Length: 246
Ligand SMILES: [Zn+2]
Image (cartoon, rainbow, N blue to C red; front, side, top):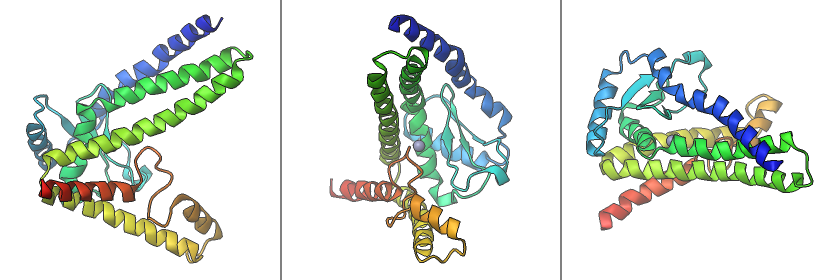
């Protein structure tokens, strides 16, 4: 019975998820590259340095600025040789080499495909639970929880791998300029956290939300798919220091 359910779940996965992922290369055709000529130059230079012969394109997200989450980052797409940058201009000119090399590294390392494969396993486990309520239910549920934990862990691992791969091809100055932008975001988040803790945002609910979603290191706890921002800053700073001593 479990075999049949697994096949059904796998069919559902192939029928739904794969077409969605396969369709992501279509997104850049809706996303404009207008005004990104300078950014494309940075990307071409970085792919050269990383030894990638394929052309990687940078496009703007088709999401309107007002709908964009303030911290919406650059996004590498699975099955695609492009990545998207936000409409909002929160990525400073100086930080672009680091942010873009990070996205190119995601494409180079096929992170999104691997993430998709893990997601598939989790979805199959969930599907089995919903198809057949057997005595194995409890064990399967534990499997799902483990699967979700694995997804989060894998994503944090992949983000760190992309950060460090980017650092390898960047100059110290490029890394430190990128890190400076991360540090600025971290300090803003820390200030918000401290204000909320002191009850100074003026809204009880806002105070509560910020106190629960930020911490005393200035990390955003909702961003479970990246290592904490404070951690990313410190391992990239350490990378520059270590390289100087080699
Ligand atoms: Zn990333």
